Each structure stands twice: as C-alpha cells, then as structure tokens.
Image 1 (cartoon, rainbow, N blue to C red):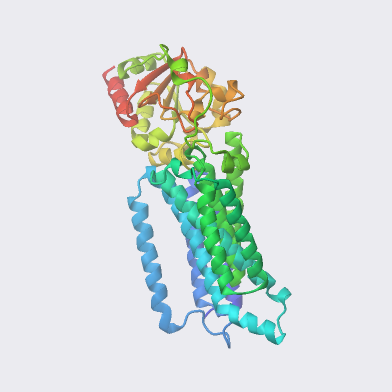
Image 2 (cartoon, helix red, strand yellow):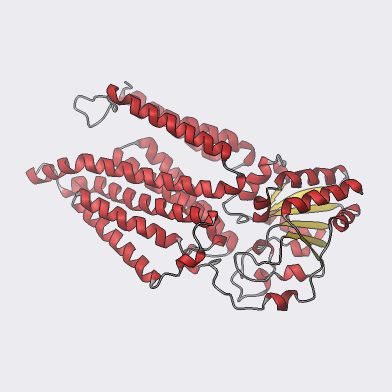
Length: 485
C-alpha cells in the first residue's frame, strides 16, 4: 500500500499532468499530446486511490480488499474495451453525440458515487447526531457536497441523453411542445432544491434518491426545448456540469485529485460556454430559454420573396474556370461538410489549388457544426495544416481580397441578415463575411434554411453561385473539373 505522503505525491503529479494536458488541448498541434497526458494523469489517480490506505477504515486498511480486486480489473477491462471500440468505430459526424453521451456518463458516475458514500455513512452520521458527538454543522460540508453531486450529476446525465437524442435525430423538436412546460420545469427545479436542502440537514438516503428523481426529470425539461442551432453551447455547458459534479463528488469522498480535475473541467466548460455565447451574440439565458432552432415559425420575408428569380445555379466546370484567374481561395466549412464526410476531398482540392500558386485558407466559425471545434477536428483529421485554419476574427478582414469563397454546407454562420436586420433571430450574431468576397460558391443540397429557420439572402446575391449537390459529390466533381482544365 502507498503511504499517505506518497499518495499525495502521486495526486500532485496527476494534477500537474491534468493542467498541462488541458493546456495542450488549447491548440490542435498539441491536442494529441495533451489528451495523452490527461489519460496518464487519470490512470495515476486511479492507481493512487486503489493502492492507498482507506482513511475511514479501522487501522488504515486498504481501499479495496484483496478478494475484490477482480471487480476493479473487470471494470478497467470493460471500460477500456468499450472506449477503444467507440474511438475506432464512431464516425466524425457522430462525434458531437459521443461527446454529449460521455458528459452524461460522467454525471451518472458522480451521482452514483455520491449515492454509495451517502448509503455507507448515513446511518453512522445519524447515530453520531443522536448520541451527541456530531452536530449538524459537522456534517454540513459532507451532505452539501453529496446533494450537489446528486443534483448536478442527475441533471447532466438526462440532459446529455436528450442532447444526444437531438443530435442523433431520435428526439424531435415537436416533443418540446409540452403544455405548461415552463411551470413544470420551475416546479422540478423547486422540488430539487427543497429536497437538496432537506438532505443537507437530515442525512436520510430517501431524500437523496427523491432529489435524484426530480433532478433527472429536470435535466430532460431543461434541454428538451433547446434547438439544434444551440447544441454547441449546450454541449459545452453540460461538459461544465459534469466537471462540477465530479468536483462535488471529490469533496464527498475526500479525493484531492478529483476536486482539481473536476474544477478544471467545470471552469473550462463555463469559459467555453461563454465563448460560444459571444460567438452567437446571445446570453446564456437566451440560449437556455430562447429556443432558437426549435422549429418555431419566424416572422420575416418568405423564401420566395428572397430567392424568387434571383438564384444562379452553377456547375463544377464553371467553378473550375473561376480558379483560373484566382489568387486567393477560402473554404468555409459547415455541418454539411461533416454530414457528407468530404473533408478529405476538400483537402485534396485545396492542395491542387496551392499547386497552381493559389493561396488557400479555411475560415472557421466558433459555432459551425454541432460541438465546439467541430470543423477544426474534421479538417485536422484530413491533415489540413493547422496554420491554414483561420478563426473568424482573423479571416473576416481578408474576405474583400478573396477571389473565391467556397461555402460547404454552412448557412446561418454566413447569413448577412445578422448584420442588416435587427429583428432577425440571429441579429447581431458575428458571422463570416463571405458575402464580401468577389465570388461566393454555395454548396448545398437545396435552398432549405439553417436552424434559425430564415432565408439567407446571400444565396440570391449578385456575387453568389449555387451548386446544388451533396458536399462530397460536389467537391469530387470540382476536383475532376480542375484536373481536366
């Protein structure tokens, strides 16, 4: 067994690795190394706990009895196999769903660990209060952390399941039209708070489970009305929730490294949520209760009024001709690129253009796709050089000097209505200024609107050409046309 001092040393090393791992995740070039460092940190933390002394066991016995080690080994084996299969089999288009699901599992783990600790200690605490050697003030830190772990963990679990269902197309937007939904949500929140407070002062297992039931329902009601356009924000927020739940559980079981790791995840998730909200020019309250992209009809000009007689369709051959006199081309990826899985074809086209002496860059909007960094992940998978990926603030001033902007399946993040119509649901949202390029090529299957549910006047602009096709087929056809030219 590890002594307490050596266990603390391992916890310190694991905490430092978590910090450097998180720092590595801030840049695509260092992300793989950062992920590996965080994985090693987690392994060290697990081993330090399992090999350390049990602080509450009589005589400082081991955390796991030797006869029960097989349970730990089986759990590690099952978890490793499941994680490996998911990593190898999940398509990049399904990565947002997977991230949401993993957030939910983190919340569920926190809820169950806190429940086990409450179950183990509740009777002893009550006896201590009855005989007078424990006061309510003595137990308040433990019960508060336990109730917070249960509440946040339960909300995270079911909220993440709903987010997964929405991204996967299992949960329909129409399901959110529940009569008196707001009152039900407020009632569930109030009930969760009431039983959390009761559980803080009366360490009774039943209070904890009642709290979890209400909180599980609350998680469903909180995420159900949120539209698909807001999923990047929701994923980031649920990630923060999972970290906060883990942090609270760390206090419950008195585990330093879990407190640190949970705090890092919780804080970074909140920061990322704020970045996402800023990128959409919306407050977090508006995201949670505004319902953008829920299928609610939006007042404004109809598609026929915006597009009537103004759409100019193009072909792969005409697009290839545009490149003949171009000096600068910018690709603007959106969720359509993820659906079509055409990032490798986009990379090949970009390389071909660079061989012709054309400057090629990729414009990345913070909320393009269905999770934070979705487009970065897809293009990195296709080995697009990191220095070619340009954030919105960096790329926008260069669009007037761009000869051809190729938009692949993006819609709301390039809709100029955000700048021109203060009554629009996306009014004020920072967008990629592709409309300022000399020529814009929009690759879409149809004129269907984005999640905001409004027409995009860029489609009918004088400098815009529409190429109606699946993203991958369109790019491959353009590659063929460039080769023939």
